[in-house]
Image 1 (tube, each protein chain N blue to C red):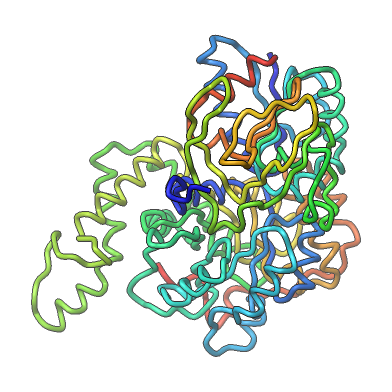
Image 2: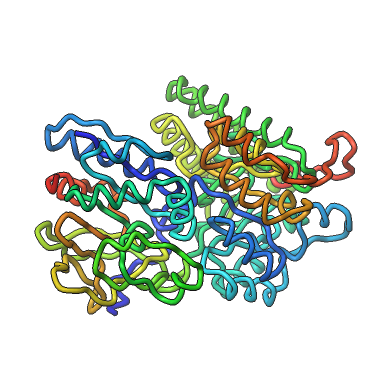
Length: 331
Length: 195
C-alpha cells in the first residue's frame, strides 16, 4: 500500500471513531474473561483496568495506568475496541498505551492525577482520547486540547447516578445558553473558560513578582490569547451545532438499566458502565440488560422487562459519605 | 420517498443528516428516519446500515426482528447500503473474527469480508480513492474491513491498491469506509438514484 497517501490520526478519524460508539455501552473490565462477557453481551468497546473504580476507591493509594500486559491480554481476547485509562496530564503513560495500540485513551479522574496544572495536549497523539467533564467549561477545554469524546464525570465507583445526572443537566443548560449568546458574549465566555490555564503562570507571577500577558506562552506552544481564540472556536461550533462537536457519553455511577436509559433520555450519546456490571450479582445479565436499555431507552415497557429478576445491583455509596470526590480532579 | 437508517447503534444521525442533504441536492422530498424497532423498514424505499460495531449491531437487529425486514426489502429489489460495520453485515462470507464472535450476517451480498483488516484504531486512515461513476473521493477508514473476494455479478467500484473497498451487486451497495463523515454527498446521491 502507498503509505504516503494515507493520513493517520486526523481529527476526522479520531472524532469518527468516537461516533461509531454512539448508542452503545462501554464496559469496564479487568481481565480477558470479563472482556469476553462484555463483547458477548453486545458492548461496543471495553475499558481495560487494573481495578474497577469501586475497588480503587476501597483500596486507596495512588491509582495508575493498568499493567500493559493485562491490557494486551484483553486486546487479544476481543475484537471490539479496547480503551484504557491514564492519569490526568501523564504524557508518558499515554505514549505507552499508544505504543501498544490501545484504540482510545481515557485521560481519567478515576486515577490519581499526575499534573495539577494541565491536561495532556491530545492533538499530539494519533490515538483518540476521551475525557471527563462536569460542566461546559471543562468540556470546551478538553475538546480544544483534542479530546474526540467527552463523558460526564459523575462520581465513579459509587453506583450512584446523581452526579452524572447533575453533570449532564449542567452541560445541557450551558449549551442552550451558548446557542442563544451573541459573539461578544461567547468571546467573554471563552476568556473565562481559558482562565483555568493560568494557574501555573499565576503562581509563578505571585511567587517571583513578575508579570505575564496575553502573548506569553503558557500551555504547550500556546499563548493565553491563542487559547482564548481556540476555546472561542469550540463555542462557535457548539452554537452552530446546538450540541458538543464531539460525542458526549454518560459515565460515573451508572448501575442499572434504568440509570442507563435515564442518561440517554437526558441526551447522552451512549453510556460507560464501570463497577456496575462486574460488581453486580449477575454480570452477564446486567451487561445484556444495560445494552438493551440503552437501545430502547425511550420504551418504558422494555426497561421494565429487562430490569426484571436481575439480582442485586452493586451496593452503592451516598455522595456525602465519600472521602474523595474523583470528579473534582482535573478541571 | 422513505429512507430508513438502521438506528440501533453507530453513527446514525450522520447518515440521517447527509441523506437529507443529498435529497435536497436532488430536489427530492422524502422522509429519513432512524429505526430502532420493527415496522418502518418494510414500508421504506431504501435502507442504510451505518458504521458502528458489527458485533453489537448484529445482535440487536436479529433480536428485534429488524434483520428479517432488511432481508425482505433487499429481496424485493429495494436498495440497501452498508457502510463499514454495515458492509460486514451485508456479506455472505465472514472471516475468522466474524465466526469467533458468532456475528450473524444478513448474507445478502456474494462477497468475502475481513473485519478490522487494516489493524486497530492507530492504523485508521483517510485517503483519496477513485470511485467508479463518481471520481476522486476522500474516504475515511475507521478500523475498517476489506472485501477480499467477490462472486460473479458483483461490480467492484473502488479499490486501495489490490484491496476492494466498494462494491455493488444489483440493488445492494457495500462500502468499507464512511461516506457519512465528510459532508460530500455524492455517494448518498448515487445510492438514492438506485431507488
